[in-house]
Length: 179
Image (tube, rainbow, N blue to C red; front, side):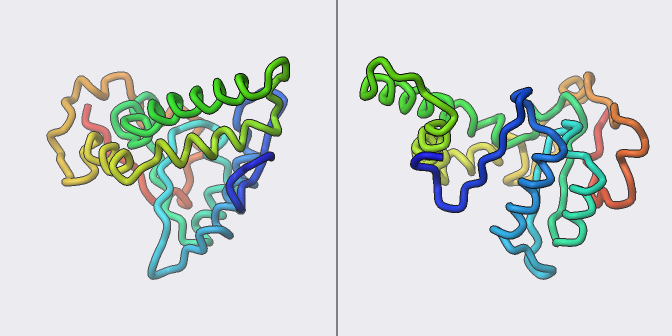
């Protein structure tokens, strides 16, 4: 991973999608990097993707002082701070880094090895304290606002659209949905 951030973990799958196996590896790496402990747990905000809901990942979080906040399906566009203020600047700066690489490396193709370095540059530029705070404000998390959204904003959400066996006592936090 050429020019990646120190401590980066490179995981890929031939499908291009996140898998439970890779998510579990990421979770273990993240826990070892952040070192959460009982008096200072880590909050991990997740969408409802099946790869995030493996029993192993949920147990790993529970055993290592990671509190999971798993949003119901179809509401992350309202509740996920990164959806509100993180991804657009990241895409803009990544595309800029990509275009710069192409100009500097005429007739070469970007490989998987360069992506992490391009992403590292984009992360430094896009994930500023202002952008991060803006995302929490836009979702009503910062300055908690129960009136931020109307019931209509969540009409497409269902509480669970995964098999019942996935949601277990290890899930420590569920987000209530107004319907």
